[in-house]
Amino acid sequence: MAYWLFKSEPSTFSWDDLVARGTAGEEWDGVRNYQARNNMRAMKVGDRGFFYHSMKDKAIVGVVEVIAEAHPDSTTDDPRWECVDVRAVAPMARPVTLEMCKADPRLADMVLVRNSRLSVQPVTEAEWKVICELGGVAP
DNA sequence: GCCAACGTTGGC
DNA sequence: GCCAACGTTGGC
Image (cartoon, rainbow, N blue to C red; front, side):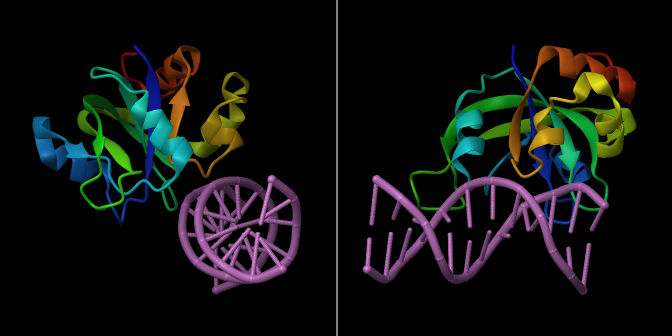
């Protein structure tokens, strides 16, 4: 199983919005970046991801699961863009802020720390465990 | 609200 | 195919 990180600006689509979708989940649409799309193409059903709130929160707020592999993005006719479906699994007991990630030497190489602009990122198993520990959730 | 960094676009 | 100009993102 692989691990990922999904970034969203909460006024556009928030953790609460995803929770409201329940087990049906939601398309992770609107991605218009090749690197992010390629990451989504690599995802398998059952992969886990963090849900990160950019801008105001700047924190990982929950854990999501991939429930459908990459398919055409319904928000565009452009065949280049694809998206996966995700559902909310569990909120973090404590949000893991960007500041906390930057302060932890074990996360120094995290994509979130090094390239904050990429909206869908891979997370290593080691990083996954550290963030689960910081956030107070089971890995 | 500013601005740096990055990605994309389009002229040559 | 290169690179300058532009637009967008997101931390500060």
